[in-house]
Length: 75
Image 1 (tube, rainbow, N blue to C red):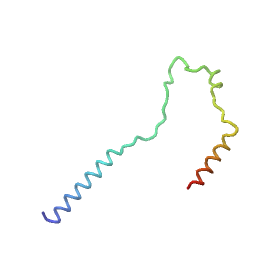
Image 2: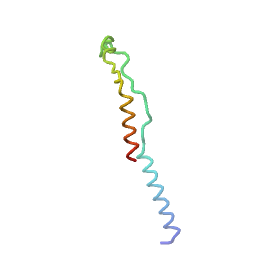
Image 3: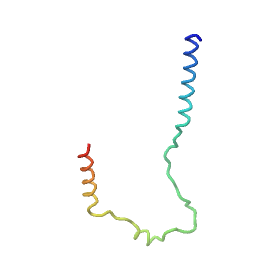
Image 4: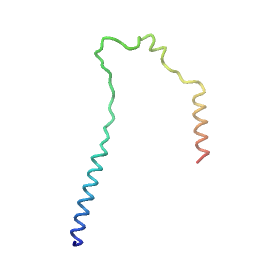
């Protein structure tokens, strides 16, 4: 087989593999998930929605700072 033919076959094969990889890499773009806005009922009453809100602990920032300092000492 001549060198020019081998190069052509290799180039076509490489382009085919690159095209397949590009097609397999199809990642959907980020979208907003929306609920059904026209339903007749609310899953959680408004009074309970306020009670279910989670408020962070006062020591959360200190805890996160301590974790970041521990990670910095390892590396």
